[in-house]
Image (cartoon, rainbow, N blue to C red):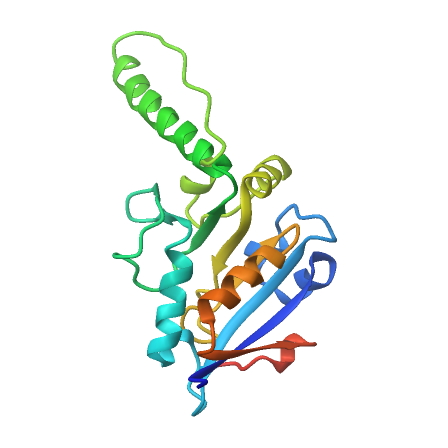
Length: 210
């Protein structure tokens, strides 16, 4: 039985950036990188993954597979299911432990930075080299800026997800992107199962605006 519908607009970055917000269009992506905008509606026309219990469960299952950014504590959260409340601003699906290594590198940087801040009050000392993830966490809007960071994330992640916080496509709509989104869609289809139909649209105007 189908409880809701999922609509998806997917395109290469060269086309997709013309239909996305600045967080997406300003990234240093290659023209052939794959991007998707994913949203949901219930069978009565209600917009958003939150419109059905099954949609909420799908988002919870997706989030629980990924690292996320805790904007309240400016830190990276490990994949957990029990404390998921909707779609975080950014999600990172680890690839073979590579993103975990970036997280550990950042934790060490954070530790060294705290030590530096204490020591530098009393004597000159060398500031620690910034971690790759620091620029995301320390930036107010969690932007992914610069080619080096973008490539490092794609090397270490199967896919990255950015929440669409404007609400124009309902609760928990999101962008997913990768060099190749096949892994994301296989995983997402496994999460959704038989609860929903996933329909790909040819034009972003075919999506439902809330």
